[in-house]
Length: 192
Image (cartoon, rainbow, N blue to C red):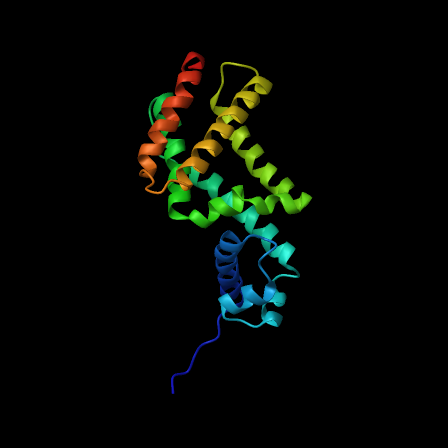
């Protein structure tokens, strides 16, 4: 007989979040039950409720955490010597993030966001944080104009990621990043 060690509360919570991301990505918010989440995580419902008061709370935390992880990945992109290369490095981090975590795409850009104003607010926070980051890179116009341009770049990113994630034979993340940077730079080069 092999003795099993108990998982710490922090490790168990992490496990539930990781499983939750995958299950919500596969089935969406409405079609996912706490029973299904508990079963996939290999825990009982009472254990699940020890960590999250509700399915809503779990999903909301996943949105926040996934958005924060995406921003950290973009902010940690390679330091490049020219603005053009910095733009491409940011796109490369964006596409790599979703290439490594396809479930994050479904969570951040999926239809589940429409079911609750809190979810829409959290998704908006992710977009606004990204726009503020981009606006900081656009220094040749006033902040409000930079934010408007950053929103356009955000829309470009979302459109390209949607196309890419639904391709039957998707291109490598690096190739998509180069295409996105090429398109974005055509509009940004006059600001450099």
